[in-house]
Amino acid sequence: MLFRHAYTEFLGTFALVFVGSGALMTAHSNSGGIVEVSIAHGLVLAIFVTAFMNVAAHFNPAVTIGFLFTRRITPKLAGVHLLAQFAGAIVAAYLLKALYPTSVFDAARGGGQSISNAINGAQAWGLEAIATFFLMTAIYGTVVDKRSPNVGGFGVGLMLTAAIMTIGPLTGGSLNPARSFGPAMASGIYEAYFIYFSAPIVGAVVAALAYEHLVLKRADAAA
Image (tube, rainbow, N blue to C red):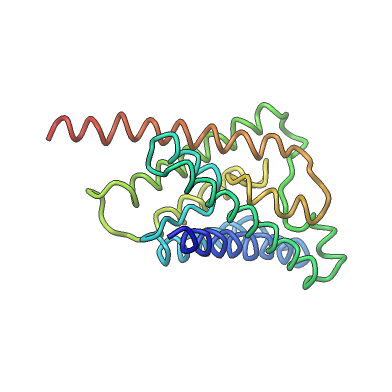
């Protein structure tokens, strides 16, 4: 069981970083825009969540920690998820570094995120936290809540696409500590990583607790 979780979390996070950062670097070198980048992230997340949702399909430390707070995952299994997610992100980032032209990798910071000069750190933190709140709510509403229509992971992927389209030009639209850490390690640029680490976790935990207690438990009580 642990190996199955480790493998799927590693592979899903690997795919998210490889495709997401790769799309960002390709867009950077070909004068692409936020639409291409957001769609690439959303599609790969939707596909891999659908493929592995019967196992867990978190691919995001913030999501795992959110489920830990609502006791939908044990501390031991959460630890396996976190290690696999960060490992997948790191391996993907270093493979991109090895396979992409050095000039493209360096210019795009390895497909990592950065904060726009138009906003300050507090604004960036708020944007990342709120966007991750929406993402975690989408996960609960389309995957966890069994009363919802079965749309696989595509509701989650669409939410990530919308979030990156909205905040991507300002923060890069991480919503995922592992997604930011892999490229940061490979590029050696850890700018604003505290924001990319803490804001998604807080947003996901608040969303998980809110849906668990305000939607699921109230619905059970009303049934």
